[in-house]
Length: 111
Length: 114
Image (cartoon, rainbow over all chains, first blue to last red; front, top):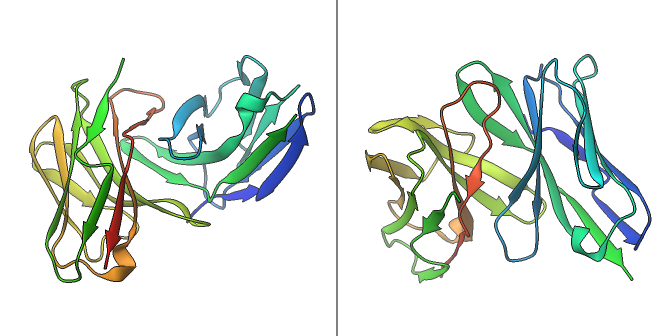
């Protein structure tokens, strides 16, 4: 079952912050975050593992709440280059290499 | 850098044709995946392979088959293309490693079935 992402879309002005949420009805082993710009392949941002700490990547960070089976992606002081569609992919762990992706969140950053 | 390449960026086929989409990765990854991406539906897994000649169905395998004869190459086959298979197809690969499996994506093939 696909994880649920919210919001579906968000529009920001440069410098504003945003939070994108990803929740699953199944127990999670890992959560992956990807960003896809229009016409390009998804690009890996970060991975959060069960029992792991909050991860960061420049001004983008994420958290993983295992109990609630959800993850949040935090974008602070957004830049024009942050525009794109953000996907979370959830993994079941063990030898299961599959990821199940959410439907995506379209982020638009305007000047 | 990991490189995943797909045989075509754009492809136009007719209903009923047999279609082959090729994916090649150059990092000796064990696992390879085929997704289709449609507006509002995100990425949906069609098939994946965790070793040569090994394959497993994903969430939407109907109408598709796959082939993995060599480790670096994973092919998606549409036996008889239909208009509802018009979509963006993305291939990905990931290494066999403990703790998280980052997927590296190819640039995608936009397939139109007329």
